[in-house]
Image (cartoon, rainbow, N blue to C red; front, side, top):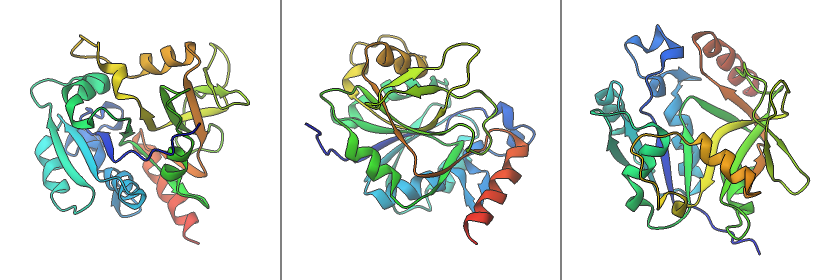
Length: 242
């Protein structure tokens, strides 16, 4: 039975070095790059605020004061800064650093190098609507690989008829790409002893257990990972406004 659980807390990853975005990121952290007149991180935080998320934990490392100063201007959601300026912990380590903040409940994760143009529905609310902790450890919002902006890799997952995600096989093209948004059970990290580690392995392990699920994004996903994709994303936003 579906829980109809709406996470109230999001972990927002804003600590990365943005190496693929250089030279733009020589003087500006990637989350503050603007597309459509809004910083990338604000596109994500605006979506969370609209969906009813109350608190966003934002980790910082590269040019952290710029990110913090920018976020002080926001009213919603409530921002909690997780300071990683002394040591970059990667996404998994960043979660473990603030594990007690999630109050033992499933929470959203969010990358800040991408956003999406909404279709007819609120994607975060639709994602939460299919969350079922009895059968899922992780639920990812996935987008169409060929119809997304800035995707320069052959996709991430295939999906079966029940919504389970399967990791892309080598030398194959997968129809779905991870959007950078997901819902994750907090207890997956309870036995973790490493300080620095990524999230991808958690996705693939959940897939092997048959407990990684996906929900297709309604709209268009924009991955802003390289300097040239900024213009591509701007064009897509301009088209959506017509």
